Amino acid sequence: MEDNKPHGHETGDIHHQFVEEHHAPSSKKLIWRVFWILLGVTIVEVGLAELNHMYHFLSKSIMNYVLIGLTIVKAYFIVAYFMHLKHEALSMRYIIILPFLLIAYLIAIALYEGSFLGTVIG
Amino acid sequence: MANESIDLNPKKNLWGGGVSPFNVSWGKMYMWFFLVSDAFTFSGLLIAYGTLRHKYAESWPVANEVFTHFPFVHGDMPLAFVGLMTFILIMSSVTMVLAVDAGHRMDRKGVIMWLGLTIIGGFIFLGSQAWEWSHFIHGTEAGKMLADGSILQGANLISNEYGHPLFAGFFFFITGFHGFHVFSGVVINIIIFFNAINGVYDRRGHYEQVEKTGLYWHFVDLVWVFVFTFFYLV
Image 1 (cartoon, chains in turn red, orange):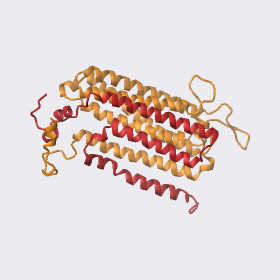
Image 2: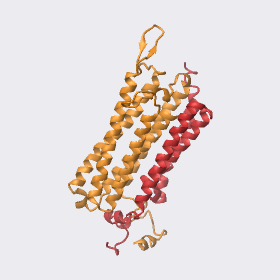
Image 3: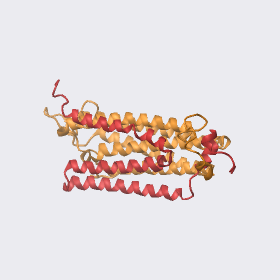
Image 4: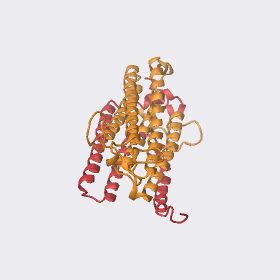
């Protein structure tokens, strides 16, 4: 490999940058570990939803928070490892993640206002 | 090579040109921007779904009681089929990462094999979704007895034997929109699959196209993770 070349992101040389981003040899192990985590969390989710449907050991709303929490865990693993966002520059991570604060805001508004839907104008 | 990235002096004017402040190629950055906007579209749809579900909570169908079938098996198996679909999509995401990984090593055969498996996974998912839709549209054998004595079977945009008709509308729209994303992903995967076979990326000197397509494919998996939770689990 042409080791004396400057880093790809300085020269705009995509190929060189690409080779530099070359994963460590252990990346396959990491990929499969993430796969097992995703599979495990999915099985836990289905199991919890199903068992709670049968035995009602948790109230529906608490169970929903648990399931949504597990979903966000899965989303984290997909975005961080499969989409490789964890290894991007910090500025890149911010411009991708911060806009989703607006989504949190929209959820808060929509669920609150949703209770009044139809009660004002019928 | 590691030394070169260390000698990148942060005081050097990052925004003065000549360097890539985000340390990412323009193609990947555009893909990320597209995915953020697409994520906003899906968020809008899912939030609309959540709002109206909240409003009509009493007549909203319980997914465990709607999606209980499993192909070629008779009996009540709630969530089994959709769990399998989720597994297939996660699996195809893994084969896609392995294709990207092979691309980093300039391993053309590896890219072709893993991309091929990803395409197969995408087709199996699409077929499963068609099955799911068909089951939902045709409904149960017994159906639901209406007030006038007629039997309502299955669901469409106007009526729904399982509960509130809006459930069917959102189900068709959101899983359909997601399914169309999967379909587009499969088409793009097929194109880069043949490009890889024809050696396009070897001539170009890098497999970045596989990586960009991979970002899209993982995004489709990511959206399904949320659709799965909000339609089937909660």
